[in-house]
Length: 263
Image: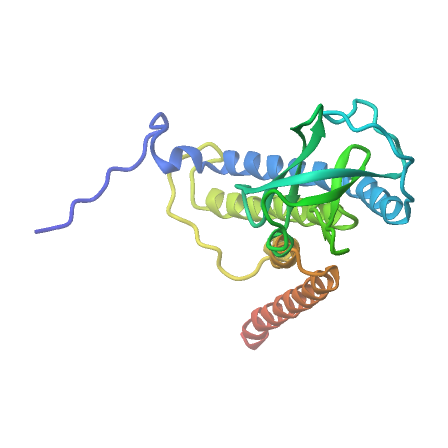
């Protein structure tokens, strides 16, 4: 019995994959990814300035703790707030979310949330008393009675590094999808056509090389960052992954030139 062949897609069949994989739409997806990446990267300089100021900041003067964070927290200093920890609670991705509770009129009330990496979250226990350090109203660290400090994902350079890697990964979608659109258009009847055979990425084109330079180091560097490892490990992973990606691209380009020169 012969295998039944699937009918070719029509332009109005929105439930078919080809409807959403038109070359023009691939270009649109790439532009959207590029815009999202640029928006994320635009926040990196401000995050870097905040990280440097945060690490150099002194503590603020004591203040009266309220049940909710103040609308106008002080700028340029770290607030120390006695809290009771509640958690861990579910948080998307690695790590956990903890509730910071403060005493108000003899009762514990919710004050703020703190996102902690996996390694830091393991050092905390539910109903544990501690002190939270706040930077402009945002919890950035939890100091334990034993003297240890657990840094949140908003502490220091972690915030802007995470935004940098996420922005790089999003921006990598621009050259990757442009290359996919170019190959798809070459096998289709036009930019808005749903016809054409499936196009595979044959070889490493310049656009795919740029995409790899953005995507590979960002993805590999996000792993130790999300797990709460030391920033020195994050930097080592970023440098090594970038070097290996450059080496792989050069090797692929050399292999592509070899057969061409032989011919």
